[in-house]
Length: 165
Image (tube, rainbow, N blue to C red; front, side, top):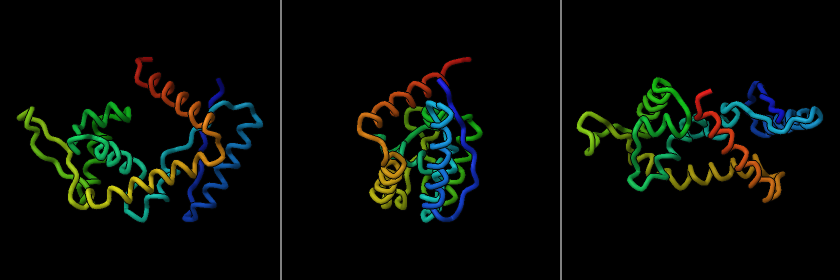
């Protein structure tokens, strides 16, 4: 399998960024690349209106998906294959922006849970709709079958990254 990593500067215009991305994809296809990876920052312009980075959005989305609407730092580390300092940095940013707060963990007297604030709760439907729109925009040229294959391949890559190499 041939994998390519695309690096590009971001423009304020999302459509320009999208066209640049398509150009990278076309070039990778000419070179028989099976999978092309873009940096997470590529999605940041979609979330700028909410003062969120793509990584911060992913954290909120994970917490939204929890029945308890809370998560532990270790949950973020495992889900996103990130280091403890990276997870704490994201949480500090989200807390400063008023999206999350840390509360005592009733099951672990020493631990804390990350909980959503009223601000984040009020924005859930809007942020989830935006996340769905971003996903749709990024995959609009794929058939349902291709989207399914993409998800399968990405899950395999994530599972590989969780293993010791």
